[in-house]
Length: 146
Ligand SMILES: [Zn+2]
Image (tube, rainbow, N blue to C red; front, side, top):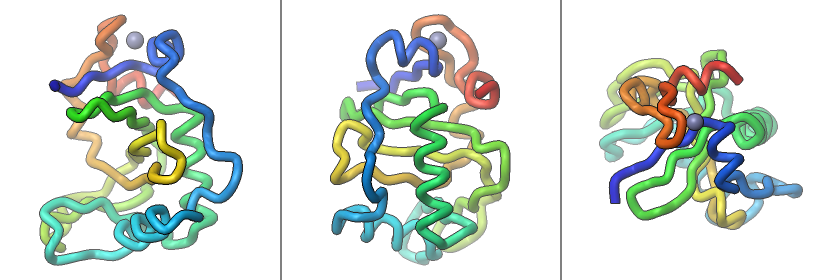
């Protein structure tokens, strides 16, 4: 299916914002694996968002901020992700370990599954042409309003 985008307000009206984790956000095996993946450059990854700050404390802060403020992307497998503009430099995107550019946008994927959900930096340009399916506002503009 094609991806769908909802601004924060419309996402809330559709009950697409699930309850955030109350415990560790880097706790399960999957969390640890993904945190490691997104805190180091890897020449084998065609596209990889890497956090600037490698600490789990900063990761937790960004993760929960995104959960509390982000807009929703429904992915091509029907999964629910949150996307949020942090308003500060949080990481870089690399293509086969070559720097693509800095980013201020964080994506929290698989928010319906607390064992699997994790976050990484993404390029804002991925969202430049996206609009909220409900109200038609620019998705990327709605990201920076919150
Ligand atoms: Zn909307």
